[in-house]
Length: 261
Image (cartoon, rainbow, N blue to C red):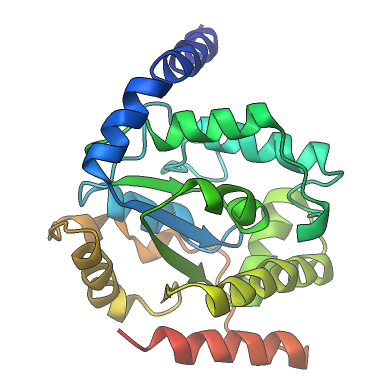
């Protein structure tokens, strides 16, 4: 029964989003709110960090994906964003585990309307958008967002591949290749945008990083927000040496960049 109500709830907000598109656009132009974009490979800590930002008054929207066994603390992800990105990947001939290249991304007029309905849905607050698929679809969203701040989150490649193996039975070699594909895109975007990188393997600097981002968003840090991070939930950590030289260099580069506040 809960799933039926959940689906009805989603459709209700989809319809409301389209109906309110014009008035929300007017309010959006008036308030010129900031949008927080959270980018990162699957199983890299994006859900945890998004919830921490949410506890610091970043609005994630009305309809969030339901928690599941692989993410019992919640995804903290707008389910409508997930649906749009899934649709774009499908019509582009790819999936999250077999991402299409940037020149293969296909976006329809109705996809853009749906994106705008989400972007304009919180005209007087900071909207946070998180979905690992956003790394693949970012250039479809980018022209529609005028005032944004990007956070890039990364995690040790072997930890990610271990987690993908547990969740999706993905062989570790395939998981590493997927880490490489997603983070090559993150690296490419970082050369075009002013991205704040967060190393999910270095919780000692979480507070400094989060505070620097919140300052850009004109939000205050909630001292209780970091309590959401629980190192006991890290079941797949593996900080062994990475044999693949290209992946090793990319990870080390991210680590150095992430030390900058």
